Image (tube, rainbow, N blue to C red; front, top):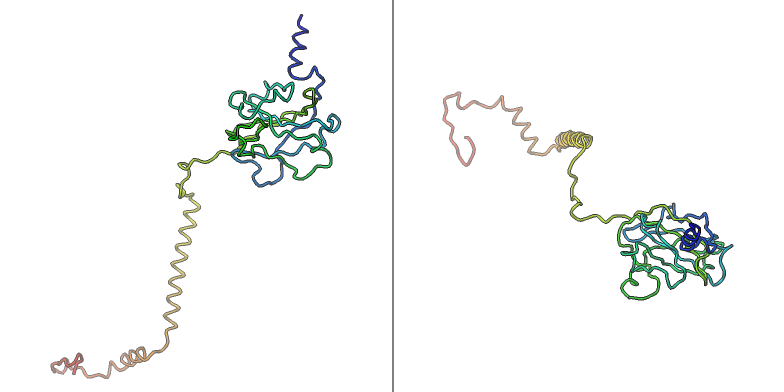
Length: 249
């Protein structure tokens, strides 16, 4: 009595219809790539040389995007008319997008070698029925898989990817214009630099003083210093000094 229920459950996932499960695991490219993961998009390696033994010329490859905690409950659609759309993501927690002819993933790998998930910023506002590849609404995490669809439904699928977490946008209130704390090493280095600056400034000023040229004023000061002992002491002789035109006579 339990066998019909088992077959019915397998039919819902496509296994009873001969769905091929491929060992390929989608992944974000491991190499450095500009914008590989952003706040609303991420890049995927193209699944080239994956479906060749299962695809016909009229088949298409879809990308299934689901929240990581909802991937286990996703059910493959039985036809293109049942494909979950991008607009349904808030309620169904999954959607399908990037419908591509299977021939585009043949060997050798064409260029570019990556797919951009969430890269279409216009389709979500146009109300079209075409599969939208709109920006992802939250950081996720998400899991994805590729599904090969023919005229009579799914034919082959890859494994689910590992969870993909998008970048989080920083709130302006969390950005500090200056560091709030300095480490002890920074304080010590700053003190040493300040002391070194003082020493260098003193040395430079001393060097400049030693290099002052022998000006007439400086020569006059030296002459007055040498001849100070030969000048008569007017006050010692009981004479009164008279100030005339700013000098002593």
